[in-house]
Image (cartoon, rainbow, N blue to C red):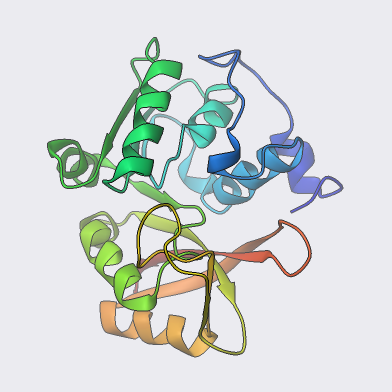
Amino acid sequence: MNAQSETWKFWSNQTYASSCPSYCVGHADGTPAEPGSSIWCASLLESARDRLSGPFVILDWGCGDGRLLDFMTRRFKEFEYYGIERPGEHGSSRIVQARASFASDPRAKFDVYDTPLEKEAVGRAGIVVMGSVATHIPIPMFEILLSRILPVLERGGVLISSFFIRDRYAFQNGTCYGHDDCYRWVSYTQEQVDGICQKMGLSAEQKELFDAGPGCIHQILRFQKKQ
C-alpha cells in the first residue's frame, strides 16, 4: 500500500475524531511522518478488513504508544482494543505513555504481557496484530509469541504480522529496545515461514506490502488455522 493505492483512498477517510486529538507517534514507536504512519496502520488493518464490520475485539501485540489505536478511533466506533508490550524499561514506558494519551477512551486497555490483561485479551480477541514484531526477533522467539496467541487462531481468529522475507535468515545489531534478543532487523525466508505454519497447523497468505524506505519493505501476512 502507498499513497496512490486504491486501498489507501478507502482508509484515508476519517469518520470520527481521535480519542486523543493531540496524539503524534513518537520516534521510538515507528515512522512518525504522515501519511506514512497512517498508511502503515492501514496496511495492517486492510489485511483483516473482512473482520472489522460490526463490533470486534483486537489485540495489538507490540502496541508502542498506541499508534494503531489512534488510527482506529478515527475510523471505527464499535470495538474493543487491547494493547500489549514486552516487559522491560522500553515496553513499560510505552504503556505509561499510551495510558496517559488514551485514558478517556473506555474501549482501550494497555499493559505488558505476563499479566492478567494478556490472558483476558487472548481470551477475547478475534484479531491479533503484530506490526513490526517479527522484524526484530529470531524465529524461536516468534514461535513462542505465536504459541501465546494460538487460542485466538484455534477459535477462528486471525493474526496479521509483518515480516522481512528475504533469501536468507539474517540479523543486524542486537540489544534493540533494551533486549539482547531484539535486533534492529531480522529477515526470515519463505521456507522458514512455511515451516512455522506446518509446525503450528496454520496457513499464511501475504495480503499487503508496506514500503518503509530503501531496503525496508514489510511483507504483511495473515495467519489462520489451516482448514
